[in-house]
Length: 367
Image (tube, rainbow, N blue to C red; front, side, top):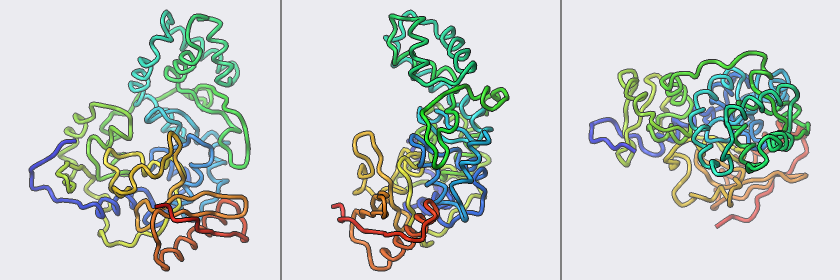
């Protein structure tokens, strides 16, 4: 991170927290449509099917799961590997532009599997894989077996990863639809959406969108979000159009002049977030949301927990059970906080399950 000795104003942790919550539609619920929100947020982390739905329920006024499900069924939104080599739910337009933007990172990813791809012509692999999935959507197992028939000495998993890295493969429905099940079956974005990919957007344009959704932020913050490197030049080109600040460690932060930066004392209501929510993954320095003493507590191994925000900061985890929503705070909540968390949990339960009968239970406080 670049530190600056300039006289740029300092934004404390709470100021950064409130600004980020406002951009993330978490300070107050937004009237945006599901499609507009997915676009504003530059996609929703979607390793599992349900998290994008819960992410929007926490952010939008009047959200119902069918709204996103309808977008998926109508091919206005798709599930595809983009930032950080993880699956995101994107609008169709962003799928066709953001994937080309992060393609250099997908190309670098292939170097990890070079031993398993010895002797494999990657351009031929991409062409063969495209023919296969555009003729008929394929599971990863089917794709792997077909490629292995061409390169029997290659590592099967490496062949599948190479296809995913070289091609913009989307998961076709019913996978991703609310209340439906379906195995992961793939085709190309261009084939599924019926139009060609767009040229990759300039990094400059994406910097502005990132700041609108995640700012104020450092160069390294955006690189963490995108899984890309060498973005400083784009920030420098944009510097005359941006405001600059410092965090409490002296790291230079950039921001849009007209973006919201609420008073640090602005109330932040509790929010239930899904596992892998981008709020917790899109900055190199996560202390704007994750207190130092809670660092690492939203994960176990490679699995993320569903998280609870209280006063804008990570304060616990939660899980849905058959007849209840169970909250496990990291510390003792005040009576007022428990009441607010209970009300928010009831709202979430009704939004996602359409039931008026519910139980919000507090589990043991996690030390």
